[in-house]
Length: 481
Image 1 (cartoon, one colour):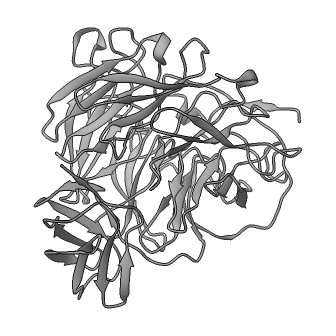
Image 2: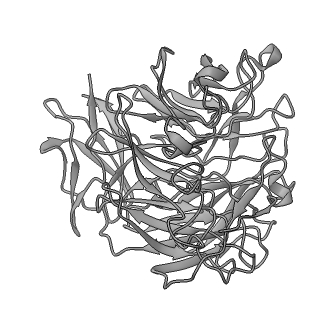
């Protein structure tokens, strides 16, 4: 395999940390049930980047683009499952610019996100709130503190805790200029929880995941004595611990430079990806126990020309069939107009058996930096950063024949707390059960209902008795003390 390097599209080079990609040719193979839903054309957005779509309370999907729109500063958009795209907002730098990550949904149906640039500082980014109709409010201007001690360049999506606070990371800034972890309330009260130093890892790109033990886990993309990043955990009060250091094994066979947000499975283990390292230096899928024991499940580019993919930058999503789904930026089809593969969509079992589901051909998309979301209709949805008729990205769906289910706005709550449940065909629902315990509920629409966490409930799956049949949640709901 002889790597070939190429630069990112111009609209992505506004991001302060610019890098080039290397890829290799690949052999084509039949695709699964795949549909190109729509193409970006710069006017409606360009280059969705490290962005995973999120389902709203109306059943539609929402996301961001890094470029394009009226001012070429990026957009927020909505897309239906059939492919109707609506641009909700074009950033204009004063309210933020060039969002890298996706959005987080709250109980009221609004979204919270980060812009990597713009805002009051003009350069270092914002945290914002946007309604489903496109009304934007700046929650916090990053680099409000002298010397950007609060952070700079937020590249990660936000995650919300049981008390309604949001948590995230910045790629730069802080006391050492190498990134921070922060908490912010919905009304903009900002608390820096941690500032990174090189020995523990620096430059986080990924967001945080709140594990079942209540702590948040994340990754850094560089730093440590091995210079290849780390996994860390942090409490809501800011107690910080390095859990694992990448490149701890010879030739970095355990992976290097993680960029994607991890996901926790029902067994308590965390699963994630690295775009570097592995047996062929083309990336890995790994499993990590909360205490820090790492197992490499798969090393990419296991065959000549990398038909299985090369460089997974996004995290994984746990499907309702118990398997994980993800993307690689490169590898795949040799007939891509570029002299290398344009990326893949894959499925991997918890034991590490990988199946390539789709190989991009550039006409249907290229460079899927973002991850996948499984909507409650059972299908997966994702984006590509390039490719399509104007080479500024696409939105696609992938059906694996999985059944509809219900999902949560937030997968944890306290007894007596109101939680949000997303689904399909919820009108006429006759019962909601938290691990078998009946709960009071209110149907808001065909795609959204609220329920009160009942006394006596224990952590476990939630089931909804809808007119079309019983719907089960895709993950356990965690009852908090």
